Image 1 (cartoon, rainbow, N blue to C red):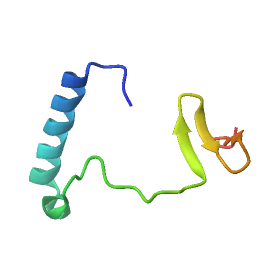
Image 2: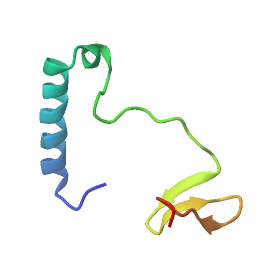
Image 3: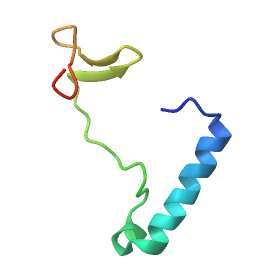
Length: 65
C-alpha cells in the first residue's frame, strides 16, 4: 500500500526488482523478488482499519500493542 501515485509506485518497484535481480543471485530465478506471494490465512484479512480476525470479528494487535 502506498499514498503515492500508481505510476510512481510501479516504476519504483520495477527499479527495485531490477536491482535485486542484478545484485542478489537467488532473486534471479524468483518471479517477483520484491513482492513475494504470501500464504493465505483465511481467518485474517487486511482492511483499512487494520488486520482483522474474521472469525472473532476483532482487530489483531500488531507489534505487541
